[in-house]
Length: 357
Image (cartoon, rainbow, N blue to C red; front, side, top):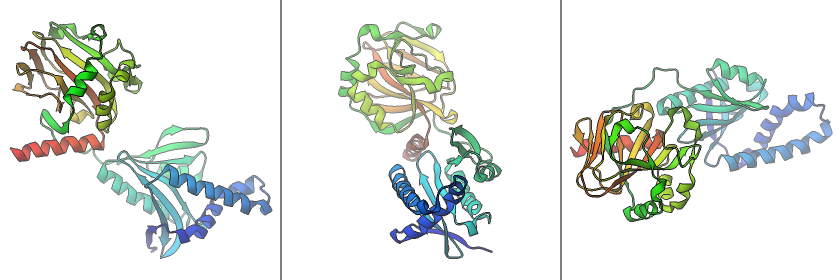
């Protein structure tokens, strides 16, 4: 049985890597009738460009030499990010191909992907033999160009149930209230759009859209069927600090709004749709202006949120709001897609809350 292992690439591996690269281009150059006397110079130029391109485009990737029984057999390049495990390249010398070496390494990567809940992604040339191998291993096509397919593997195991979170979680983030209020002051009175759910409230409930479907300043409905169409509105360009706040949240964002509930106004009890942690999209509230007489009742529990804090609220649960104070209540409300960064933030905050009793 072959022993398959990897080691980090070293500068002295350049001659081996050139040999490996040349072996992967052999059939292509033969088919194109490329003159033998020109091949070395051409391959050397292409090899240098490839090496430089990979190291530039995938800074921080693992560049490793594949060993079979202790002998240099190939190369594998893996780029790990918070979103995916990307196989940048995997190549073997001819004697080691079709011997299960690549499959063995990919299966090991599948184990890491399942444990970290990340997909394995790669590109494969159209019509190559590797395309059929990846298909047998369970990769699915998620994109394509004229030259290649983008493939993805996800664990076929039963979905892991996310840990339950409390209905309200204060994240370990704090924002500058004065600077948020300064950005808010740049909004004109007529730029607040009345909330579309008129049956849900009494008084004045309105919003200024900072990110919206199509980047429209008159569109405050966070349409769940248009998730790929959210864009910054021109109003966000006025808000230097709010842009800093959003940059702090290292996760994809959908709708972003200043939501205002004027003094004396009431939002009736209701539920929102698929905006809980378990749904993969959550709603964060950052109070910009509030008062002690605000009543935000979530699932029969009053939540006290102070200016500058950042809260996750499971608005799938029944909730109601009443502004019984003398000043308007205005929150920065952000709908976020749950990625690994946000998931870790929420779970850590919930654990700290439980530990603190």
